[in-house]
Image (cartoon, rainbow, N blue to C red; front, top):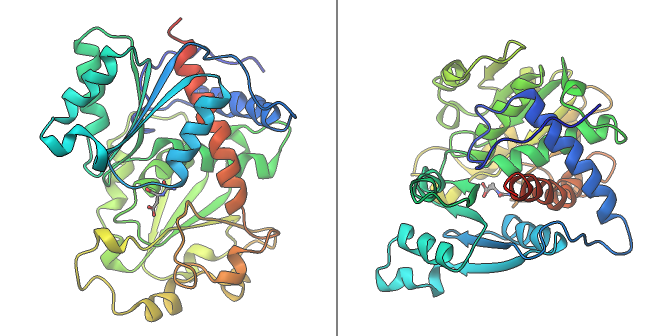
Length: 334
Ligand code: NCD
């Protein structure tokens, strides 16, 4: 199968991704996975280009993953941390972005606690008629498209490592469990997984899964397959015969009070354990975007079980997916 041409300057959301675009990312990621398994894990694809990582919010894996991805493509990387930057002197975010533009940045990776900041920077870059591509590395409660794509790759790869494609997930049952309300990861995953033809089942206490989520996918452009999304306020109906279970962190830093009785009770009702997985498909595998509250959303032994947990693969694949996107966005420009 050939790779469809890439026409997207910015990657800000998965809401309007087409099946061709998903498959282009999956196939390109597969080839970078191969590069990463070599002794020399570096290619000259982005030599001479500048990738700026602008993280206005704490991050371990996403930030390191983007940095490593850029380095493995031979780009020059600029790393910015809000706390040691001129933001503390009153500079606006757009002026910070324009400073990086003036230094010759080609690709900007943006994480911010407010939804919409990467979009605002992308609009400004377009208004200035620059060729800069902007990648959303997580904005508020809105989206985290590269996490959605690495999760998608990890799922498809676990079904067919030689040829990971979107179509492999058709009619699979995927449960997303946990703090959906505060999760940009869940929002990006809902777009990608429903586009694949999978049945997506969300499960959380009602305070963390408002009914409004049922409307979520209706606002989107049409997909060839009908999007299938189901909501549950107890765990068992979501887990029954599930092929994959994606757990999410309880985002205590974003929670107002009174959303949950206690962490212990939450674990009893929604925590994923080996026992709870008995009702899933016997081949079931578990994902988590990290960071994990061990013993809260997932039991510690399950998290560390390489037979059942895809968590380490998610992190490994994150580098290859980000290489693929930086490559496609950087290459699309030349
Ligand atoms: C997530 C995030 O920051 O949105 N983590 C990540 O990027 N891997 C999820 C979280 O913080 O719980």
